[in-house]
Length: 251
Image 1 (cartoon, rainbow, N blue to C red):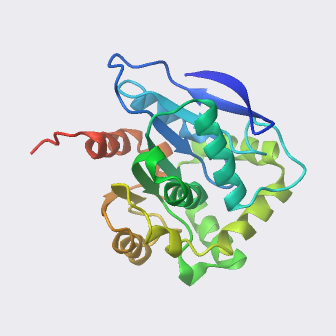
Image 2 (image 1 turned 90 degrees about the vertical axis):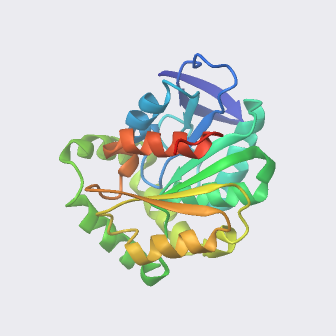
């Protein structure tokens, strides 16, 4: 994995990317991080997928190593920035993988420019309407911290410091004000809904509802992991993504 910076929509944007794979025609995978984090926690999945696919993990504006604008981008501004990123990199249709708030961004992008998305992965998608409030979302996140592997804590702390706590808090507000259901029903790409079995932020009823709303979707639940399924279960997640992209699935 290497880091590079490009000016995207007048903003210096950091992207962590893999080397090109052996097969030149392999579809690229674009990873979109959640609301308090960055490319860092996506590295285990990026490295695993990078053996077979070109993988890109940009830091959204204000997060990770990307430039920090003076205000917190809302969901539509993040979508616009990623569309500019796709143009800057001259990307063919990608497999778009969004996690948590990143899944909301990914769903909206897939609706805004469907020709850019070959396949879509909604991993731990927020936000469940039964907890669509700052108190509800933060409460579930606190429960999740008790179920996550403790080695992730230093990564999370560094990401929050990079983004600034006020930006994280404002992004929580953007998430809970967004009704993702409207975008889910308009997605046309083949979609994988992915969740950890022990994820309190995305409970079974909500992940099943997401799967029903997307016209062409299937659900994969990864055993024994919580919300950060892309970090703590990179092997099973990578295999599920490869199956989604395989034109000749096994069995």
